[in-house]
Image 1 (cartoon, one colour):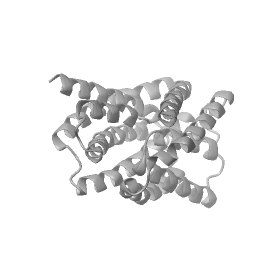
Image 2 (cartoon, rainbow, N blue to C red):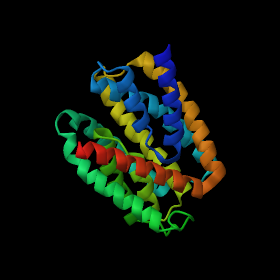
Image 3 (cartoon, rainbow, N blue to C red):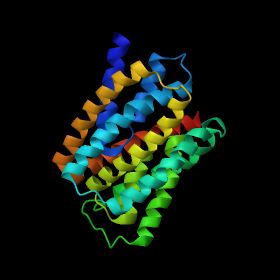
Image 4 (cartoon, one colour):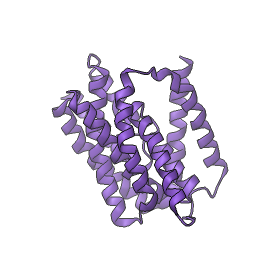
Amino acid sequence: MTDALFLASMAFLAGLVDSVVGGGGLIQIPALFTVLPEALPANIFGTNKFSSIFGTASAAWRYSRRVEVPWRVALPAAAAALPFSYLGAMAVSLLPRQVLRPLILALLIVVALYTLLRKDFGSVDARRQLGRREMWLAGFFGALLGFYDGFFGPGAGSFMIFVFVRFFGVDFLRASSAAKMVNVATNLAALFYFAGHGQVLWLLASMMAACNIAGAQCGSHLALRHGNVFVRWIFLALATALIVKFGYDTLR
């Protein structure tokens, strides 16, 4: 019962954070490893994906009702992310993840510094005309981040938000809503792979999914209520946490 309550609370917190700026896996995956130290890593990742996809989808639905989603770039990104996330999940057993850590650490530092130094970054919706070039660019980033999310995962949602703000002129709130659409696609593809290989702990995942939905609804409510400034500072806080984690893992 104690373990169940711990996982339920972590799933709620993961849903709350993930609905604002992504990064829910940073909370759920360590919690699952703590409670289930003997479980196979694939079962942990599959259970996490099942839980998080429900929270992500519920947050995406809430955002779409209150915020104008930039569909012209969100849809191509999600469509490209779907197959590449599946390929990323397949590549988990083929490629050493350790080689990615220094690269991701460097990218996170650049993203955090850029966001911190550019005070007006993502504060207003400054979209230019989104034409065919932007749609292809969205597809490219969707494929790239989709593969990363299926293969490795941590920080994928944050990178997506940064891409939508930096390259398409979307403000933080709308970027977060667009990132949720892409995250639904990446989680669905990766989950399809894990579930097809029997790597989901269904009973535990279902309980965590319910808590994840509750957290996602709470987080999206806070983001919609407090706007771009709130999302920007949560984004910077998560980026800092990711830098610390990746820095520690890389040095270790």
